[in-house]
Structures are given as C-alpha cells and as structure tokens.
Amino acid sequence: MNSPWPVVLTSAGVRLRPFSQRDRRAWRSARQRNAEWLKHWDATAPPLSNTRPRTFSSMVRDMRRGSRAGRQLAFAVDYQDTFVGQLTVNNIVRGSAQFASIGYWIDERYAGKGIMPRAVAMAIDHCFGPARLHRIEIAIRPENAASLRIVEKLGIREIGYAPRFLHIDGDWRDHRLFAITVEEAAPGLVARLDQGQA
Image 1 (tube, rainbow, N blue to C red):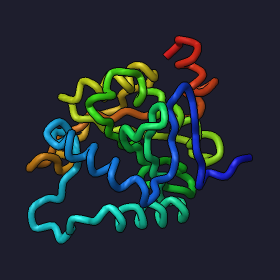
Image 2 (image 1 turned 120 degrees about the horizontal axis):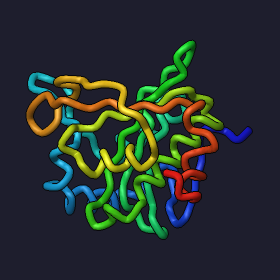
Image 3 (image 1 turned 120 degrees about the vertical axis):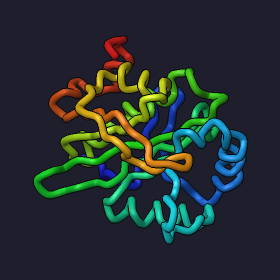
C-alpha cells in the first residue's frame, strides 16, 4: 500500500502535490488576483481572536508538519503544470471515527473547467485508499453555487445544516453539510468521473 504522505496524485492534467517554498510567488499572485472573489468563501479570524496573519513560509512549514503528523493533507493544485489552487484534507480524526473534512479554493480563471471536481475526487480516493479513512465531510455555504455543483457532480449526499458554522467575511455563516463514506465511493470517484457516472 502506498504511503498517505508525502504523495503526488495525477489525473487528466490535474496534479495534487505538497506545497514548497518555491510556490510563494504563484500562491501570492493567485490570492491577490482572486481576493475579491474568494472573500465570500474564505474562513476568517473572528473578533477578539488571537490568530495572527501568517507568512507564506510559516504556512508551508505548518502544512508540512501537520501533514507528516497525519493531522491534515495539504495539497497545491496544479493544472497542466500551472498552480491554480489549494485543497486541504483537514481535521483528520483516527480511532473509531476515521474521518476528515475537505476544503479548497481555485483561481477564478480556472473555475468551471472540471479541475476542482477532479481534485476533490482524487483527494477522496486517496483518503479512502492509502490514508485509510472511512468518511469525508465537506461544508459549503448555501450561496456557493460552484461548490454545490462539485458535490452534486461527485454524488456526495447532503447530511445536514450547520447554522453559524464558520466565521467568513466578517460574520458567522451557515453551511450545508455533505458527506461520503468509503462504501458509497466504490469504484472510486475518479473512476466515476472518467466513466461519466459522476
């Protein structure tokens, strides 16, 4: 069985890989270019939080440390060898639960091209394979039509509603909750996409 981390996953021009310090310029450029578009979906620090802005270097160090320790899997998303976004498997819980959540963002210039559905499918397949997780959850704001299309396309079912779930864009925002288990994912989400079943 392959190791869950570090790992590089590829499918149809999409590549998931660990971040490196060399990604600094591309990451900053994408974040600056998409600041207005992403502000409605990006988690923010609530008032009175002692969370401080991080440098890119410290972010990468934290992601590497968390990924090596098995607390998360933090991926840069490339499309045809160009950095286009980020996908993180967060809050990995072991023991009797074996679950995690997934969050992601993509450069608006590449949205709608099928990149992020494939990236999410690749990550979930990896989680249900080498990472040996049993359940993956995705929380999406009700207004985020693009992300809602991703879970619909991949056949990830809605399991609930979480009022005031995450602090985003200046307030606590409601989220719709979606989940999939390894039993529901057969024969794999990438295979479903390739077979036109997703």
